[in-house]
Length: 535
Image 1: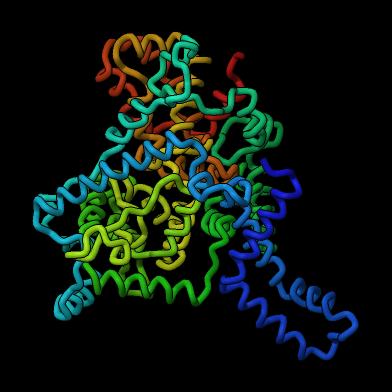
Image 2: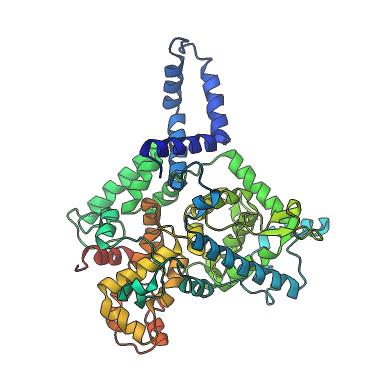
């Protein structure tokens, strides 16, 4: 283990190294040189004068936001001699399970490729590129025949893998009776209710919250007015850390898009727009098998959802200027900067080989280029963001940041506290501890609660909650930089429907009770479950 000072040194070195190659570093150097032309800059006080200039011109705040962003995504410091795989995932059996799962997914993709005699990737002929460019505006409606394609996997397939996972070094005979009742049999450190109450302290019943209609010590209209004023001030000051603290009590609709972008350190740089254009160009030039999986997923999920069908076209294409549409998910699949998150992701980007060079590493390429194979429901991660960002480049950046910070943890096997394994364990633990009769009843009738709630958590509730409620939930994910609230909300939904669930006698009946949760109000459910639960 590293000491506190060593951890700080390792973190600083990592951040400095990361920022050195960034656009911000070049901009700061350029501004520092420019300020030397100012006659007020003195040689004797050069360092202080440059710092003062950068502070007064707003560049210091931009640097602070960039550093805060790196601190937010930075994995816990490890010893400098620790292997890279330990940074990705410290537990060996978790790494093996993830590797095995990746092989299974790749096998499914390759079998589809062989069965339909379709290459993983091909360069489009010039005529096809021209045709695609001309038809770009109709991309949402003029898709290829998708009848042959199927998702490489669905959440229920992934759940079975998690259920069968065991720690080979753990003596299951010593496991408590309560722990054996659940589907997840892996011992991981998770929070109990007192710890959750402390962690989600701002959600207590005496603190004002957007999304709660019940009376609080401060009248709702006064709280909303003051909260709106504070949000506007934070945006003016361009402070990422303050924005993250602020959204723990919810975002005003008018400021949500800007506040989320500020928290994620997404800016409106010309370079970002040009990079998005480059990704679009890559889509036009090359056709990937994974493109069909994206098309298929949008048709199976978002286009069938009452809340998102209007924005189906956005999932392929985002409005740019007045007439052009661009494809977010297709561009995402070409974005090689996404590969950086595999440094702290337990997963490994899949590789393919140039035809005829199978097994030769020098001819291996990551496939798809971003290293992420879409699965059933993947498009729902971007669907809610379409309500917030009409500009294509900005929407794309926000989605990419949300993915590399949060969403990747929902479909990879790891011991991280926000990983899907920990969320499943937390959900089952909360139900067993605070609703033991309900949990035991559902278990006895063959309706394990996790089999119902897993799909909610793996999609971060996208497509299950009303859009306004989902955005309130995602406010808190960003505010607390944690996905644990998904497990808490899943348990709270079961608690809310407990009386109905106690009367069911089968899995189908239990699923029917929880088939529609779109009318539920997120914040009252969370507050009551966390702070009004009898312990």
